[in-house]
Image (tube, rainbow over all chains, first blue to last red):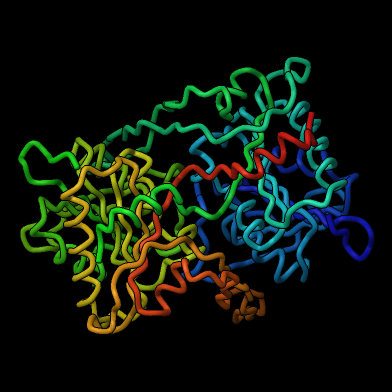
Length: 261
Length: 261
């Protein structure tokens, strides 16, 4: 991987839980010995934002002192906005790698599509910046990030030693168990799983209905090559992700069928 | 494709420009003779929302009388929320097909990732509902939808005559030219293109900085098989889309390299 002019790699860090979340603090701690870390992250939680960008209103960005000795900025934007602002207005160049997270909660299987954490990483990949999103399968603010920090350091240092494709994009999930119980890292594919949604219908004090999104996670994918399988079996799951969403199999079928004129 | 119990297919329609946008009105008009149309759409513009979902606040949904004789609901949610609410709280079943749009403006190439229109369609596909997103390459509220209506009708009626995979997902873009100039429909792959972002930095009356996202579209993909090429050459572009984002090529490489332990 190309190093920055200062010979230290520049590591851009963002997240979707907001700049004050324990997850991003643990991510900074895990990699700060590996290069020059710069943080550009949302000023509030942005979970479930997917690949949202802010186009109808202006963005704010302020320098903050949150991480000891680390240049940090908070923005009013989405995780994707943060990556764009970081490149254009903070770094004035592409970082050598972009890291997103550590997310509080799983981003395996179909969650890659809803996740602000992974969308920030994907935005970097689109912009030719190798990128990794990290998630720990523990929603708690008191979550134990010890194992997560260990694997983050291992994965990022391995990548920085390589010449890596500029579009490299990895979705890394870490099981919520003690480090000693983790069996290692497994390269996986995204499980075909989804949420069976059910809205919780309630009435406000004026008697008007409102709805809370809830849902049950259902995994339809019985393969042992999936991220869901790996995590259940105490592996760290690594899913390589791409932003070309073309379904080439269906493309061939449609070309053959000539359904449309 | 499986028909509903009433023998007429149930067609769910949503969009990201909001329920009062001309695009969704033209979509309803284009397909209302093909089945029972039900509209569940955002109560305000939601462009650029990507696959955002609303998890931090409750949703509102109201029945409205916007399209003559068509059951219609507006929600406070994102395009993806609309699909989820439609299935769980309006239809109480899966529709036979979900249509999203007609978007005011292009959703070709990398835009598929930022687009609320395409994210609504993708959500349907994840939920095993065949789905199509439509976009017209004209941002104007006075855009001429004549050609768009013609191709929407052709594509949807062709699909409804077939037994189609439940995860079918198409990204259809229509060039902003007179119908007579359109050469036909071309099955394409997603062009590798991106936006070169530049934030427009301004100062508010208090002298504090704020930023507007702007950007120049750059197409790196010289293939004649892309949606960008098709649209430039006056074809309607149809890109089959998938929600498995695994990069299988990179997966094999990483398995071979054994970078991580």
